[in-house]
Length: 83
Image (tube, rainbow, N blue to C red):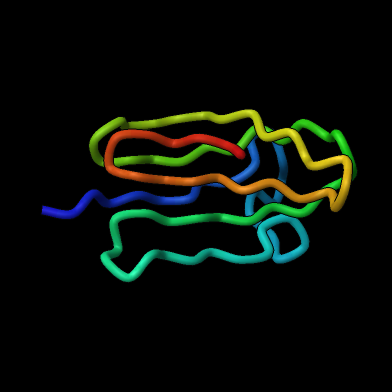
C-alpha cells in the first residue's frame, strides 16, 4: 500500500499554497518519494505543514538557501525532511 500525503501549505498564511512559494512538486518513478521545491528569500525560515498517512500532521521548518533562495521538502513513507 502506498503512503498518501497532502500538502497543507505554509502555516499562518492567508493563502497557504501559492505558485510563488511552491514552485514544483515531483515524484520518483516508483512514486515512493515526492520532492516539493519552495522559493523564498535567502535564509528565510518557512514552516511547511503536510499530512502523511503514516506520520499524520507534520510541520517542517525549511531554511531557504543563501545561494538561490530555494529549499526542498522530501516526503517518503517514513519521513518528511527539508533539505
